[in-house]
Image (cartoon, rainbow, N blue to C red; front, top):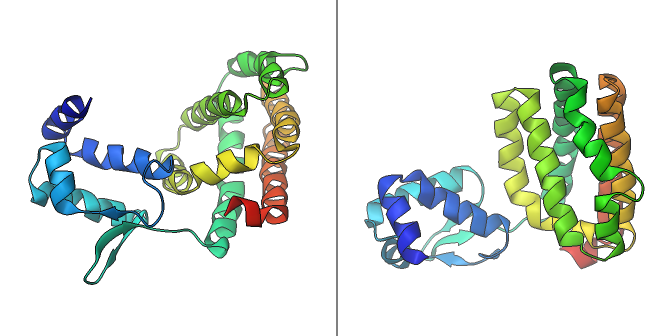
Length: 224
């Protein structure tokens, strides 16, 4: 596996950034972890110059910070940052849903109406307590909406925000009652998308994220 990663990194330098981004956003590389140039260069079988370039890109994204005399380490999010990011998500993801509803044919969303319906596949996952599988389906829906919005600037902004909060989003999903509530809220805005009601879909998506913020604030000591 390591050889495959290193080979990909040699042929496409951006892969180094992507592998580290994925590790940071999933908490496989947790906040506060030190990223040592020499070790990373050995792991990826590339020069330290290439590693420095990758770390610079991660720093620009706000995923790591450079500490004098200590090197690079994965940045920590504080409460203020988390709530600011969720406020930005509300606006951006609401806009994304509106654009996707306006641009994509209505039947695009029928698959998700079926997935989210009462007694449907996603409700069964929650009933079984398989919140991780539910979250993965939710991520698929989000990606589909972003693609359908056809706005690269918006997609880039969401990409930068979400890689910082993916772990927190997962933790919110496992809080008492949150997954079931989220399912109902997702069902509502997707139903509006299927009906072609862009303004209603945006309103419901924004309320969905505000609801998540309220849950986050209530259980913030558990989440962070």
